[in-house]
Length: 385
Image 1 (cartoon, rainbow, N blue to C red):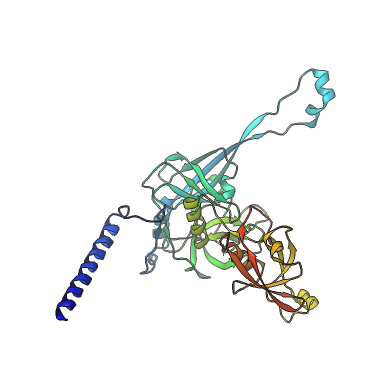
Image 2: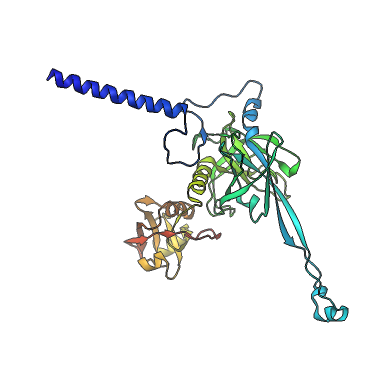
């Protein structure tokens, strides 16, 4: 018995040594061991975030500034001309048919270097329909970039430059941000050059704004202006907490209400684009609206839980499963549906090809239906799922 115990102890000790050696190799040479991810990002350690210096937020800004780039795009469009030139009588009289003149339109925005392999995260609307994209680094270099992929539903896009060793930003821990936290916005407002503004987190989880299909914005009063789109929103230690995306303004300038896409969503979308070429979401083909007290009363419901199915796409997954307009959807695979925005997220998180169990109320009676999940098509109308 003692002999067997000694042999077992030696085997365990050998396995521990092998695992320790592999861990050391993986730490010293990150690319030596196989990995399922095609892109590596830096994330703040479990030990916590560094505290800001007593001199203000200069240290945080200096950590992040090299990772924020200016993006210049251009595209060719047809210049508008007078309708008189298209009049057949005018053309016959002068004996010529004028050609439409093309001109180049330029746009500017910002982006964030998310990997030293040359990947840059920005807004989809910054690079949408661009013919040429130039990225200006903080050190003065200018590099051509190409679009790896984009996700209009969250207004995110990933660019790639053929340059390694770039200063990648450090990602904050997901959901580490709180209302009242100090944040800095970095970008290129109005094209005057890279700058930093300071504010606080005014609110989290902002939705129903009509900006994107999937909305879960960070609201901040840090000054965000045209040109800041796609830039970095960082915490007081210089870690990325969001991608600046939109402003609320009646004048076109900052009014103290800016919105940023949380780093948790940005990272998830970015990794899918890089590894799969695009973002895949679930879809069942229904149009919904929130259950108001008036709607609940008209349907004989005791509360406003769930969402009202206002429309069902003919031939779609929900239609084939037997879901009808007027049904109230309460749960998706056992998860409660709070409102139309939460339903979008629940359905989108499901993988196409699987079946989802839907708990509904139909004419005041509980109904349970299994609906097939299909791939979500591109659409911009909020409230459709």
